[in-house]
Amino acid sequence: MTTLTVEIDKERDLPVLQALLSRMGLKFQVEEDNDDWGDLPEAAIEGIKAGLADGEAGRVHSHEYVMALMEEKLTQLRAKKNG
Image (cartoon, rainbow, N blue to C red; front, side, top):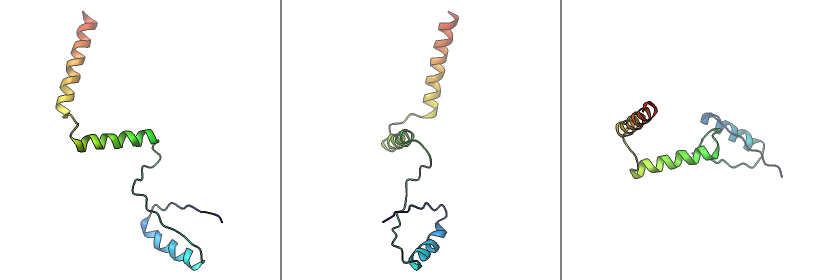
């Protein structure tokens, strides 16, 4: 037995392909991939998923808070450099 994996970008092509395979008498199984992350490395995918989970759990800071914190840090670094 040989297994063939086919990725279809255009969902509208699936019924045509299924009809063709059936007409040829071939067994096939359709598996939908709802987590299409493209060519991202696994570490990046896990990082994104962790970030999404943090957002859903409320473990986030506002843009304003982070910018104020960074400005404070930059001010401290500039003072250290000039002092």
